[in-house]
Image (cartoon, rainbow over all chains, first blue to last red; front, side):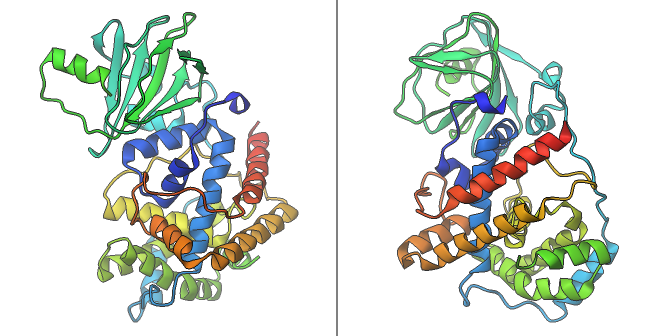
Length: 220
Length: 174
């Protein structure tokens, strides 16, 4: 599966993920994509390696003095702490949602609490910090999303089914990255309903009337 | 192979001497890293101790065919920073940790560790302005849209080495 992904995360996002400076919703997107894409995972781990070198080569005046007895205090922590046992990786080959998403949803597809937003489209907002938003989208087969712009960066990854956007086709694991000046018209593939993870910079507003929610939805 | 043996000694023999040597090098750096990222001295001290204790407890999870010890400690410290300072969850990709019987190939380990040293040497030789930008990115002083990804550093070779290690893990799990 991992070989068929054509639309990947870019280096800026992967480096920010390694640096730990992304909002939680974007971390969730990256972790979900890396679970499906070995190529991006290897690139992300290369940026981790760069972080390791930055730490290792920290300038002398940035290196902090420890408190006296710091080592002894740490050894005491070690004696008191739980020892992790080696474990084989947990894999769930039949799941549609990658593990990081299952953790947020509380299960696989059947655990998603969908809310209709019109035109047969449904969404489920995931609980992340407010500096960005994450939601799952259900788009019926063959349904076109009206043309919409963006406030900030939006990333959409296909989990099930596929969608077409102009000349590009996005299937499971593919990510579409759109910035604020991009207008696009994704259409779900006719053969299957499409489920996506979408994350965006702009904070969500919950205290609106229903039509406003629909309008808001079109502008994510 | 810098520090890899130390982690093996902690894992296999609960060797406190090996731990003390690792601690002397890394704990002040981890504390400095956390202070650069906005923690005060006492929180940074507490976190640094916690990061080093985690290294001990998770020493069996360290895969030297995929990461250097410095890389591994960096990821633990970064995750603590997100937990404690930013108070957010950090979603991690699906686990590919090896089972207890899966020892990595020594040659893979050697190559990955060497490539990390080459990366380190390249970082040390960067012009000051570019190096500062990278430090800022990792110390959390830049937002993701400000982070320039064009570093010109030899990340490609490390990437293919990590890719091989991932293939090995995926294959081992079948």
